[in-house]
Image (cartoon, rainbow, N blue to C red):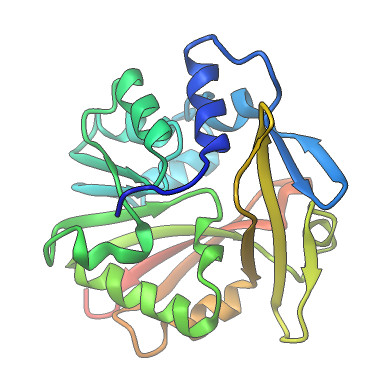
Amino acid sequence: MPHVGPDAFGRAIRDHNRGERDAPLIHRDGDERREHPVEAFYFTPPDPDDPGQRWLDDRLRGPLVDLGAGAGRHALYYQERFKTVAIEPSPALVETMRERGVRDAREGDMFGLPAQFSADRFGSALANGTQLGLAPSQRALREFLGDLAHVTTSDATAVVDCYDPEYEATRELLGYRPDPEPGVGRRVMWFEYEGEADPALTFRLFAPEKLREAAVGTAWAVADVRRGDGESAHHYRAALAKRDA
């Protein structure tokens, strides 16, 4: 699906990679503005000795699809271990990944996987960066899991992440909105760079229990949950495994 519209987020990261970024990347909610930490979030390579990275390494295998791969920090790391395909909807981010050495970077939509890949294509999937929260409802989350099951093998694994709205630190995120459904919150924000603003993003934030509920009736089960350390405990990764594997 071709990208249509502004790409402030992607351009800022591409310019940063080229040493050409002279303005901050801002994320906003109304009048509230914060500078986005581009270098720390997108250009710091994974540390194989970090316990969280070791946990991730133990749960992924090739061939891997990196969903919403950003500037390719994980794709660069994993392509040295096994075949890795990185997809992003932003043309500027695809350019950035290729410039950084990602060998298979493609423009693509993580919410349209069956139209982009054949059945049983991947042994693992990684969705890091809370993009899974862009699924607007529990039904849409379940449909994504079904699509992911279609393009992965019968013994596949996957790792996804989210912010848990049952933690106070999540409620302090820029753009947080409460939701009447237990275990669910919302986050509304957008990015601005050099006077250009991207469309607003609406994330549905959910506790691990909501992910377990969404997986019922799909090929997936939540095999493990790992929370961030200390003040980052409101962020978690969930490891998924095929039920019959």
